[in-house]
Amino acid sequence: MTVSALKKLFMVAFMGAFLTACSSTPKTDEAGDAGATQTGQATSESVDSETAAQEAKAAQAEAEATLEGLRVHFDFDKSEIKNEYFGVIKRQADYLDANKDATVTVKGYCDERGSREYNLALGERRANAVKNALMAEGVSATRINIISYGEENPIDPRSTEEAWAKNRRAEFAY
Figure 1: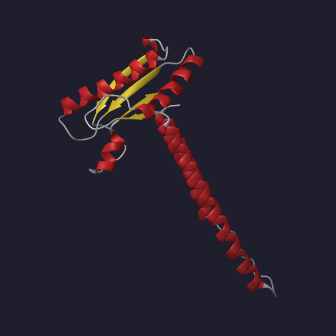
Figure 2: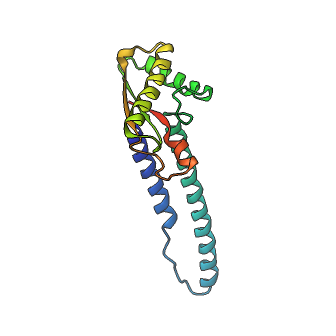
Figure 3: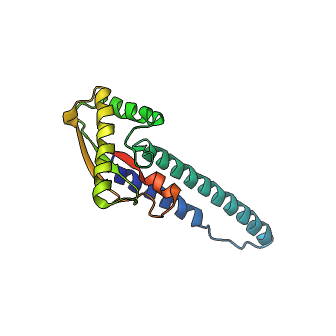
């Protein structure tokens, strides 16, 4: 699955949960216990809303975890893969080993700091580092494409340390 397909899947799941949370049931006014029915409905709707909100949060967390499984993040101005990401690379190599016809594109990205040319070169070094790690796991170079987007397509457009850390990455796209 590509990152954009996962994003679309996440958005569909989130919108479904959101619409479910916003829906209401029609109130019936039956003689005698109308007050009790409305109170019961309010409690039921409150519980339904909380459940839907929890489901939406869980779906969002799952989608983010899936996307994070397709990303390798880097330190500022570096293209060396951190130890914590070798598991991600191993899982991608295992997927490619199990799916012999699959190819992968590794997309390299940077944060907004630095010139356009420098960031394109750094994004390429990051993508190549991931490609080399995949090859070390036994994936043929002919099945791995690389591309650098430099500072284009940031995950987080803000100019903060947190945003920059998210944007310094390589992504797997199938």
